[in-house]
Image (cartoon, rainbow over all chains, first blue to last red; front, side):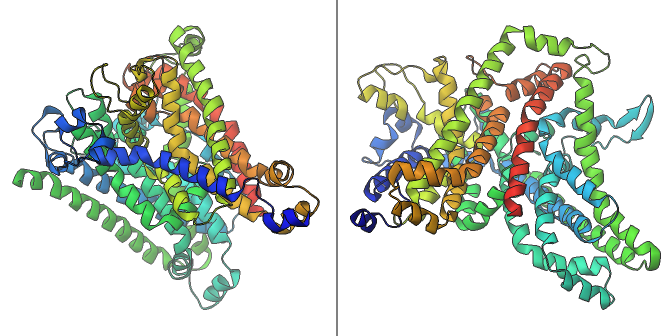
Length: 306
Length: 325
């Protein structure tokens, strides 16, 4: 007994550490190989991709940067005449406002629900919270119709046609709407836990709600906001469904991810385009992941119900 | 080059002006509304803080949700009632039957694999030195979009005629083991399982990370006490560790079920729903935006809602409970 304890302290383990180390690293290698394969393939010439498997070309390196140049700036083929650079720009143009807008609006709402108490505020908070169960598939078509044709009861227009379908605003808006229930819920948790004395002291000094929000709530909420912002940023960057529905597939507005999806469908597009295009698409999320991993984990854990 | 600039420079203009206008309007409203005093100050503050969010939620989720339910009882163009015809179609159509079977398969296999593998790795990670490196690498695919992951696996599943070099890892391994590789995306029902692997590959890290946190939160006194009582190895895990992380495990399972029900990008990118791999969420998209049948598309999304809602409700409730502790 004493002997077992000596070797197994603290004893919570069911595997010896040697077996655990071997199995974990084995799975880690398997888990990493597909991404490495893509990375290696993306630097190979077309002829080389088809003639030599990527794991062999590690032994006989013959790499080129040509693919990235072609995919970024266009190679004259039908599927990729102008390159993915415009789509890359679109992704940035879509993602920044689609991250900033919902978070600011949600922070404001969360403050009101937590600190400007009114009759029914608990019920309202719960209702917003419950909206998370509506999958965004439920909202796509009517929202698109609202953007193109407005809303009518009978023949009386009650909401004007916004005419923003197929523009950047027409993608920012749905992303903002769909992000709100979760963002309000999480920020409410965060803001409601701030100490009451801070707010009370400010009100005694004559501050109004707007000053309190700007000078106390916002600065103190930065850690919470950061992790939710990273989650939302990655969600928008990696989204396909909203992009397909609200952005036409053109280089004027379509983001990188949906361009990549359309490249797969086109038989003309070659392996070089697919591999380097895919790597360009996943590069930004990977940079965010490796540089802000702690925030990323926190945001992801918080956002797991989306 | 100048053509490129004239097409793309305005985009940056629009993003910066949109953000600038947003904050300017907000600032102006804050300034003006802040001057209100006395009895009106509170309702005005409420309206400004809460109004935008409520308006967006109403226009973006509540009203569209209700309209989708109505559309599901209407014809393809949503201008005439058809009763339950769209739902009857779902029960009778042989293609929908395949879709439902596939969706059920996804729901039964994917969450269990994701959660079980996540738990196994979480338990083992607790046991090794330098756990942060494998943890990062195992978690990394979560940052990759489903489209990106699908392309990564398109290369893994690449098949070429016998006699040519097999450049896909799966085909090469199968060949190395002495079997004949086949065109994986065409082989039913294996293809559906190969698509599931892509999902498990991206999402396993999520379960692993939160289960790992839960395992580390198990008080070591409890573990040591039961070790003194002679429990170790598998028995310790079954009687102590697992019951303590069971709640988290169920949340991971439930998250997996919702994800499996909603899976769309992977199927669309890999097979387009062909070769008997179609699933509910992809069919919803094709009915609506390819067949232009808003009735059937809406009926499918209502079903999706009915399947997802109870699980998410459960998930949200247990997350809330966990936070309360």
